Image (cartoon, rainbow, N blue to C red):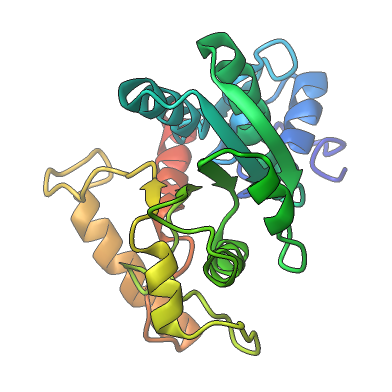
Length: 261
């Protein structure tokens, strides 16, 4: 509110970092005719709905690219029936699921079940009764781990069932089936989760590796990442790579794009 009612001339807005906030600010940027550069992958509507967000630009690839990868994968493998579960609490997960509904119908893929999931509700009975052998989960992090645990205990795993998880999740830079935040307990051992997840397919939008070519900022992408990581770890007194690491360079690019514009 203070930003849009300021007597200072605002050239543009950079951020915010989550899809829900980006869409809300995007609506305000339209009303005020101020450019918005959002650097979060979840800001899908900013990339696709130019009528609602004419002054908004998404710096990241659209998560709908993952949806198109699912459809292409099913066409290649000849899969025509699929069940889907999704986390309605995350806008990007729900947006991906709704897009998948549309594209599956166009592609002639039957969606036998669509169910909301959460960390306390995994519809394993409904999944078995759906008679689908391919299941896509539009979830992330600990909800994905809960799903794998329930799948293991209810024999909803390979070779009878094929799971596809969006946004393969990482801990300290490595793919992990055992994402366990502090204070959270699972009804599975790490070995059981690896058994459930070993044949699971993961689809992830991967950013290109850091390049050593100097950019207009005077730093190469690799030098920027090294400097950012070092300063972040010192400032926060933490030894690991920050969680928002994949989007840091997009935020940096947003600043330069706005400055050069």
